[in-house]
Amino acid sequence: MSEHGTYQIRIGAHLVQGPAGTFLIDAGAGPLTMPFPSQLAEANGLSNPPAYMAKAGDLPSALAAAEVAPEEIDGILITHLHLDHVGWLMKDHVPFFPNATVYYGADDWALLVDGVADDDPARTLLKQAEKAGILRTYGTGEHDVFPGLSVMATPGHTPGHVVIVLASGGQQLWFTGDLIELPGQLTDRHIHFMTDVDRELATDTRDRLLTRAKREGIVIAAAHLMEPSFRRITDDDTWADARLP
Image (cartoon, rainbow, N blue to C red; front, side):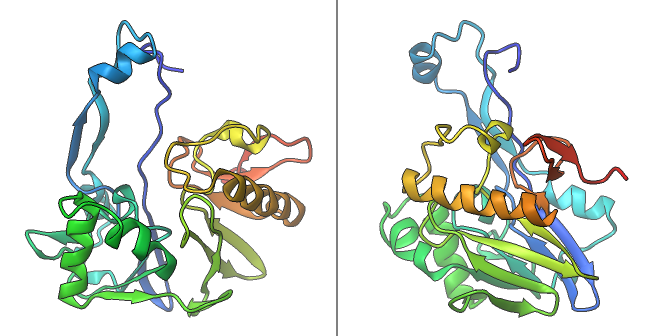
């Protein structure tokens, strides 16, 4: 909990580099500045609310710091079609990553693109991406998208939400998108986000995946967890930094 009476979460994307190419898992929120609504502060009794509800836009500079240019990205694997995961797909009506094919869960489109207002920012961006011809849908079932990168359906947060699985040397790392957004969701089934389309299904999916991750020692990389952003679940149901020996 911050001094403002709020809990800060990260808006994150992940870079994967390997023999199959250079990939992004999700594409950030784009250049975004959203002031904190006064009505929300009043409704929650916040006398000193933060200045911003959301502020983003650092993905290009983070890639530059990693010495990766936008044109070097071969593919972008989207966990779901909320704005904070697709924001850098387009800039000024052209693909920001000019050589990348973008993959997403087909079941998200009807609700999150066709089912929203024409001026919805995510709809506008994704319609531009569709026109640019860069979008592809994942196939059905758990399957490889690229060698070493597979996808499994994890509906609940959105209908087409997926987890991206990176497998190498007999080990797995799961990019879990918004399957989990707060650390407390590891043990508290009753923590939900307003953006969960189906709360019961989201909870069941999260419980199933986290149980398996604990049993198999799988590393979790969630889009919204603060540091450590790579975690394992311990035997006593707490988080451990997966980067430590």
